[in-house]
Image (tube, chains in turn cyan, blue):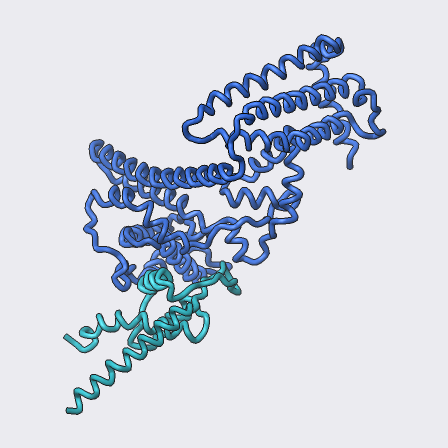
Length: 108
Length: 399
């Protein structure tokens, strides 16, 4: 089992954090998110993203609004809610703690 | 040479090669099946459809109007499989033959709660595209998801019969905002008619599957199952509607229970209102007759250039205005009766009888004292013809 495969479950779990981070910067639509992720280890597809975004919206972490595009029908632009920002803070803190633990344990 | 199939993805038409259509159809079907227990299923599916449409649009140009099979396959590969368990949202119920029935049995309550705030709420706007006057009827039609012609007809009827249509229209034209931005426009007709889209999709799947069954027994079994599922869906929808109606009625009751405490004089009031209403009706009939017969209103000559039929229309409007407070009072009386334990159906019956009796009595008096009434009734067909001619000449002389 390669490292890549071993981490597939963890990557999947971290995707939500990454979405929160990307959306926190500015209002984005799904193609933007995919483009930003495509160069990283977290490259993903619409088939994964849409269900995840809709789940996060249901949990009140983010919201969307319709915006007109230059060509074609309006697009959904996502943005974070207050709850989403809070969650992003908490998750980043927790993630920092985990990282710290990994480093600390390795030093002994 | 390949056959081309036109499809509708979230409201836009695309042309696909037949092979591509099959592939896309299978993809969307599997997506729909995987999202079966996801409360946002409709929304995710329309998101997916929109994303696919966007990818198709990027492939097409003015000389390339058809998406070929290979391109469809590429787009589907780009989309990737639908992961229903995004963060463990979906419950892992084993999908057996029982699952759809069970889902529709328990769904109405929690599903409406889950999707209620999720969808863009439908809002009432005036819609200018294809409007006749100010877009009120158009907006109402979009709001109720019906043909605008019916709404317009309803308004015309309201105007002619009770005179309220024009007033309601004017008020709405002022009060109801116009849909300008695309968001407002999409809110005016609500979320994409997903239910209809689903019926369409389901039916399509139904006929597709019918073709695939070689023997009659299998076909009949499929048809039975399909019907059961559709019925389940409809039942849940109707149940929701009924719950809404009950709630509405309940609110109305409690409102009037506070407003109009019942007292025994109410029966008398009701009868009195009936008499007044009957009198108003008879007055209207008499006025109409006098108008048609003599061309004047109880001896008052009409202003020049006002055709008789316009005056008649105005009469109806006046009648509507005169009658509306009576009607409101009557309704208030009704609702004060509508409480458990009271024999209000009998009151209604009595009231109806009184109303009818008043009308008949007054009509009899009219016929007795106005001999022209009898002539009018006799010459009614000719009058209708004349009115039609009047309207025609007026219409031709207008531009």
